Amino acid sequence: MRLAARITGSVAATVVFGAAVLATGMSYAASGEEVIKARIAFMEDELGANWKPLAAFSSKGVGTLADVEKHATAIANLAKKLPAHFPKDTGRGKYPDKLTRALPVIWENPEAFKRANQQLADGSAKLAQLAKEGKKAEVIDMIGPGSYQRTKIGCGECHDDFRGERVK
Ligand code: HEC
Image (cartoon, rainbow, N blue to C red; front, side, top):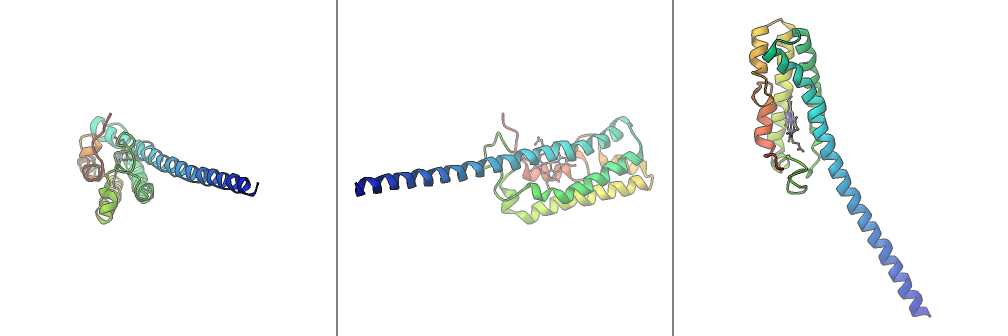
């Protein structure tokens, strides 16, 4: 009787313990995935959305220098929020290559990653200033031909070093 109670008790404890481990493991995985999804949404819906009007201005002459100033300023402000989207170990190696293109070097060499982000902050602030001063030719040169990988405001440099190949 006493033995049975002990066994039952220990089984119950094991089940509770196991469920706790499982729950913790699951919530950790879910939150890492959420971080990655929110990060990609930040890149596409915030940085990307403010990049598009810049590309349209330089490649198609759509919009005005005032638009460029507005979106470049928005990018400079978003650069301040970028690092928070990269909490430690939420990249490849920990998560599947299909889910994220963030490379482990982001956390292995955080100073270089910070510099790449600063380049975006400075580049977009400079672009906003050029637009404000009405320097159209310099604005177009700085934005580049319309691809964010080739702009001089700092998107492509970070991607070259810290974003891996897309896998299907
Ligand atoms: C400091 C580094 C850094 C800067 C600066 C940066 N990005 Fe990214 N970007 C990344 C990383 C890393 C990823 C991959 C994120 C992931 O998959 O988890 C990414 C992903 C993206 C994606 C998602 C789609 C894809 O193919 O991966 C888009 C779109 C994007 N960036 C656009 C931009 C634009 C536009 C700018 C400039 C206005 C910019 N990024 C500046 C690091 C950066």
